[in-house]
Amino acid sequence: MKLLPSTVWTRFLKRRLPTSLWGRSLLIIVLPVLVMQVFVTWTFFDAHWQTVNARLSEGLAGDIAWAVETYAEDPTPEGLETLAGRAERTLSLSVAWQEATSLPENLRRGPIGVVDRALEAALASRLDRPFWFDTTRYPNYIDIRVQVGDGVMRIIAPRERAVATQAHIFVVWLLAATVLLMSVAILFIRNQVRAIERLAAAAEAFGRGETRKRFKPHGAREVRAAARAFMDMRDRIQRHIDQRTALLASVSHDLRTPLTRLRLELALAPPFKRASAMQGDLDQMEHMIDEYLAFAQGEAGEASDTLSVADLLDQAAEDARRIGATVEVDVPEALTVNVRPLAFRRALTNLVGNAAAHGDTVRLSARRLPSGATELAVEDDGPGIPEDMHEEAFRPFSRLDASRNQNRKGVGLGLAIARDVARGHGGDITLDRSTLGGLMARIRLPG
Image (cartoon, rainbow, N blue to C red; front, side):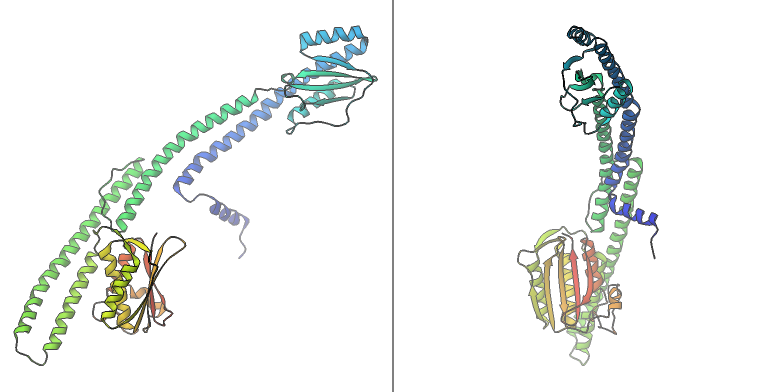
């Protein structure tokens, strides 16, 4: 489908415009000021400066025409001397006669040409003789020459006789006022954006499970209202999490008491045929209770620390080797991550244990991505999970028995807990096909 020109232009602007609130707010202030400055400057030069220059040039052209005509009436040395003295005293013009010469052939014009056009038009309207002028040779003077008979009358006039030389002061004042206004606007915008950034940082920290004190809202009334609403919401969510954790802890404690009694009675009972099966059921019940509590609690209040990725993977590899898996580890020694130790080790243990339970060979690797993020990969040579069921595998209590009989000793919380921990660190976990033929779990953590 061919895009309309307006759609193409809109997309072009969206790609070029700033994406941050700071940049867009600054653009809202800067763009109108620049447009106003350009418009005012253009209006000044078009309606005022050029008009003044034209009037000055006409006055200078009239004085030159008077000098030429006066000399033409009395072309004697005495008449020239009288004319030059009068022009010097009353008109600030320096008049000289060049005998048997002609006008220069090359034209010398300024880079802008506004003064040249105004002076040329004024001289053409006042003189009926050939003329030549140069506004560039002398910074403060204009060289004008008029053909009179077989000679040339050369007149040196002050530049201010043809140009409003103080026009730049207006532009300087305009720029100074613009810089002052923009500086004040930038300070106010920066203050408002900083308040929003503080709110965003608090929201991101809460999403990662970090515990921070309530901060004092700043900025505009709407921003302060949003900050207070966020803190109230954060407190309500935290109370809900605490209540859920306390409830699960209480249930866990209450269930552990009869489990302990059953273990004791089973240990004291005479040997019988179903004793081993009953012991296995008790172990599975205890493991399920531990997983429920870990999923509800999540070690959210734990402090972060910088750990060696090699040490983390080596420890997880040792745990997997104890259950009979062959584990390969490939990780740079200097690679580190800033994580909550207990929570991240639990997530890594869940992934490695899951891989070891469904495959004979497990490969652990890590690398630093070009973006600065860290990627850890856990691969196995097991049956894997169909691609269309990857997201289903992360749902709590999902077991996927048909494909992998995932988490056979638990209740389907291994991947859910691992992803919750990764997202709590600002990262994520994704599943893919392993080069070993089984499943690959990628943990990405921000740099």
